[in-house]
Length: 119
Image 1: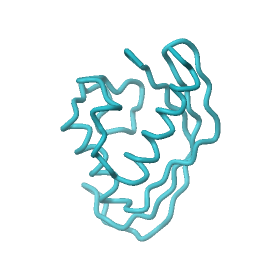
Image 2: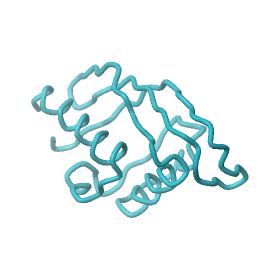
Image 3: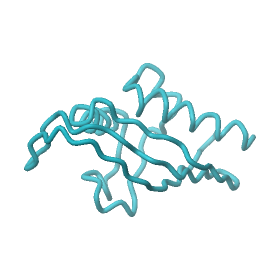
Image 4: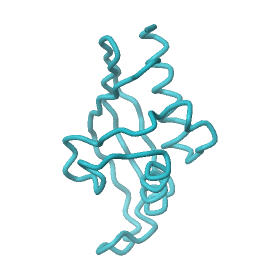
C-alpha cells in the first residue's frame, strides 16, 4: 500500500464526510462494517457500524454541532494504519439526548487510529 495515498484518503474522508457532512462518496471510504473501539465517550463505542449507522453517527454529531470541524494536527502511518492527532471544534446549536443546546463553542483534542483494508 502507498502510505502517502492512505494519508491523502484519510484527509479527504475527514474533510468531505466529517467537516462537510457529504456522504456522496462514502462507499469509497468505509468497509462494509467496522467496530468503534476504546472510545468510552462515543455512543457507538463497542458497536459494529455499517454505512447506514455511520451516516446516523455523523448526522447525530453534525445536527448538534452544525459547524463541527476536525483540524488535523499530525498523521503517523505504519503498514495499513494511520494515526491522526486532531482538534475538533464546534458550537452546540442542536439538542442532544439529556443535553439541550447551549450555544457554547468547544475545542477538544484527540487521536484516532484508522485501519485500512485493500487500500
